[in-house]
Length: 251
Image (spheres, rainbow, N blue to C red):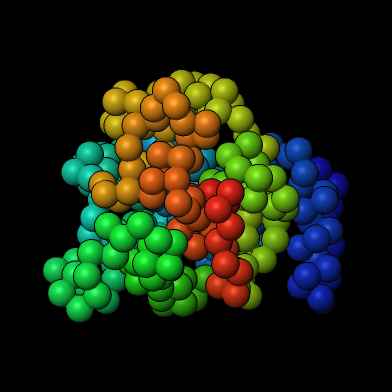
């Protein structure tokens, strides 16, 4: 990769870097981010179906990178055990982000929002239990840049994302943006890394227990298995001024 100069205007620098890093090896992209942002670089994870890939990739380059995990309080038991397994195996520098309201208190004050069949209620749930905890964690860690495992082949929304961009005043770096499911499988196999346990039960994506199910024969898209197909974007990876489109993807 050619040397990339620092430019004073952040948006110009990030656009130039993104063009230069398009098609680069994921390890090279992480190394650039670590050199550019230093202690301001963090990694987010959901401990989802394929999360072991990004956790392994990033910690091979930056062993003690802060890893932010949003625990909504509604995750399946398998996710908590999977998180514990990977945290020990990869010696993760894990930072737990949790909502201000416990599940019981939220339900008492606002009802079981996840049971309502409308996007507004689901979005309110996501803001309280996912988006706000993530924003607080990034702020508390002093994050200036954020690594994430989003991929272009997942949804139409992600097809337009750059390798290096910005979200809410922070650089957003997506090292495996160009990966396919086949690439993910090859990486996990090469490094003897596990899928989430629910993968073997037919899950292609998993979040909260109440909003995830295995892929069915009639599903046109694996993302239809989240939130009953009503919405697929929890909001963590969207600028907060943008309303989540129905075709966007879950984190």
